[in-house]
Amino acid sequence: MLRGEADALGQFSRAELELLAHGESFPRGESYFRAGRVEEVRTSGRRILAVVRGSRPYRVELDPRPGALHYACDCPLGREGHFCKHLVAAGLAWLARSQRKPPAPQPYQDLIRSYLMAQEREALVVMLLALAAEDPALRFRLLGRAMSGRDAVLGELPGMVRHAFRIGGGQTCQERIAFRRQAELVVGLLEGLLAQGRAEQAQELAAQALEQGLRAREQAGARDGVLEDLIARVAELHLEACRQDSPRGEELARTLLRLQLQGGWGLLALEDYLPLLDEAGYRTYRRLVERRWAEVPALEPEEEPEPPDPTRRVLTGIMRTLARWEADLETQVAVERRDLSWPGAYGRIARLYAQAGRHREALAWAERGRRAFPDSLDPGVAEVLIDEYRRSHRQEEALDLAWEYFCACPHMDTYRLLQECAGPQWPQWREKALGFAGIWASYPRRERLCGSAWLGRASSLLVEILLAEGDSQAALAQARARGCSLDLWLRLARVREQEGRPADTLWIYQFLVEELLQGGGPRWRDQAVDLVQRVRCLLARDGREEEFTFWLERLRHRHGRRRSFWTRLGQGLNQEEGPHPARDPILDFLSPER
Image (tube, rainbow, N blue to C red; front, side, top):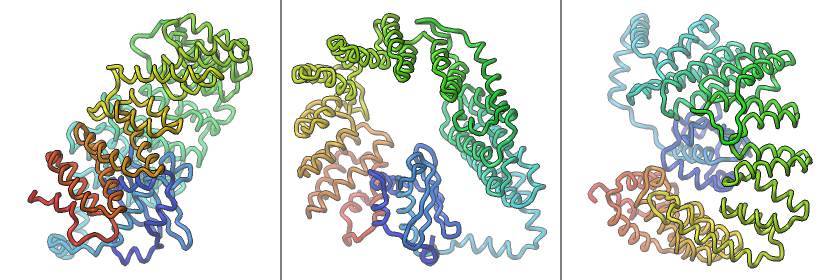
């Protein structure tokens, strides 16, 4: 985007983005921006539109108006109205692009332009039709433009949907790219239908696209994140089309259940569609589901269907939702009783009765689950039993079970539950719990991240307990002795800085960069780039830029072969805003000569 075009829109600043950002959204969004995750930044009227790659592509909208910046993002945080990291990344990308000078025209553009201008109109049409016959992506784009406001082209859309999802992503990289482009064009066409108020046609085509997409997903076999993201986007459009123009209830009921059961994915959330079903539609849906549910066999303790049945899983979820919708406790219990082959079923039933205030039944089912699975303590069973024991003033039994629960599931929640049950006896039980946490942290099966035991999760509990109890010094000593998870290291760094210990924060960041570079893949590389930036900011704040240069030199000496890391670091630094020295010391280390 050129500077003149940016001036024609409303303005906002980096400081405004920082002010609007929710929690850790700004540093994370800045990391996304520097990592090149912002795609397709464009304008529509006075709005700025972008796609940001997160766990899936998220669509972002910024609307700068006098006195306020309006915004929207379709990620979970954005849908709640927060200014998320995707909005931050898009805003920073827009600010960076708006400062660029107009790109110089390429020589080939002038040659092609001169050639096309010399052709007659009919010759250009013939040329485009020939190219569209060979290139499905081009054909879809041209059809998308031709569709606007024209009913005749609607007949082409079913064929486009079938073709787009038929190839299922392909095997080669080129085939996968072509598939994604074609499927995304179909998504764009569905969005166009909704924008034109053609919700009925959008419903039919979205349902067809879902069936084709789910079939392609089954054929793909292995998990395909791109395909699943596209199917999820089509599902959202199908729901929006149904909301705009609610179809006949019975027809929607049949379509809904068919799509839910296809492939055993359970794609469409029943809670979203129940308000759209009229009385006849709900009866039809209930009758169809019950007919399928009657075919699901009951399972007794320790029985398990071989192989696991995805249809059973989807139907169980549907029946749970219907029972909640009808607020029928006995129906909810009956659903859970259909599968008593795992301890969680007893925990679910006990919780249902406990939430309804029927404590006698809750206690009975929890004890029944304890007897059926004596070697497997389910959290639901344990928590209901502890609550009921305390309610009945059976404090010793509650405390013994709380200790067993903590040992079976060492976690902050079970630690706090043990503290509640211990009451005045907590000091001695605390020492016992900390001792167990220390032993568990040394257990050889501890999980490893990034190939490093220093980032293992198993040793994190003791650090988390000490942090929660306000002893960051002891937490840091424990982390240095045994390690902890990456998230906890970063929490420790923030807490030590807030407590006036920036030297500890600096040590943590530098230590983590070393650990991440030793055993990390692309995810850890991006995190290491972000931490290098934090080290630089900390040292620059104290006027210690030379110390940063020396540290970077040592880092380059030890990890010079991590070329992707140094390339990404250079890209991030080149995109930074604000004044820089005439010769940035980091860019010296990133120069090709080195």
